[in-house]
Amino acid sequence: MAIPRRGLHHLALSTGNMDETVRFWTEVLECPIIVTLHLPPEDPFADLPQLPPTNLGGRKHYFFDIGNGDAVAFFDFGSETPPVDGGFAHHVALTCATEDELIEAKKHLESHGVDVSEVVDHFLCKSIYFKDPNGIYMEYAAYSGEWTSANPFLQDANPVPAARDHLGAKQEERLLDFEAGIPDTYGRAS
Image 1 (cartoon, rainbow, N blue to C red):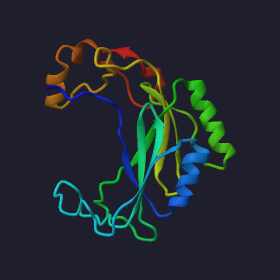
Image 2 (cartoon, helix red, strand yellow):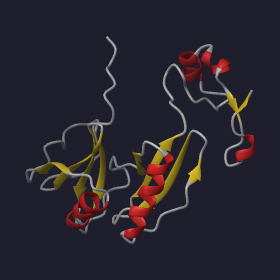
Image 3 (cartoon, rainbow, N blue to C red):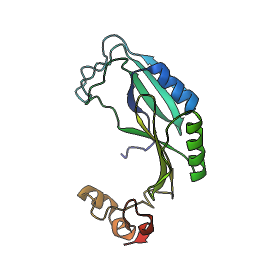
């Protein structure tokens, strides 16, 4: 039986100041809170070997709706530093539908005093980058095409064996040839 794809359930991140995080995510990014949890004093997940050895007992755990049924969640570590191997991610990328929407997001963030990158053209999408108050790297991205399993964006000429097996003939049929960061080479067929 195939596992149905339903999108991002949540991405778990950490914060040292839940109040500041709530204000940023609800007021600046306009992502409403959909869950607030206060975990019991004893970590209910401490015995699961599939999870990193992080003590989550007594922590607040809030979820924010980022659209399409997807969520970003934060554990409040207060003044403690979460462990390096704490199961936390590098950055969060949120979707914009169009490049115009991306530019509006940039203006909105800047109007709230957020330091935002220029629009970066990755060919498969255009992005802006910034940080939230916790120092978490953030991105807004707008795809440049409708990339699906039937119409994948393929640039790796030498994919790992599992990817080559999965893609089959699409690997050669749909392979693009360009150098990242050099717009003049974008879109060349192999």
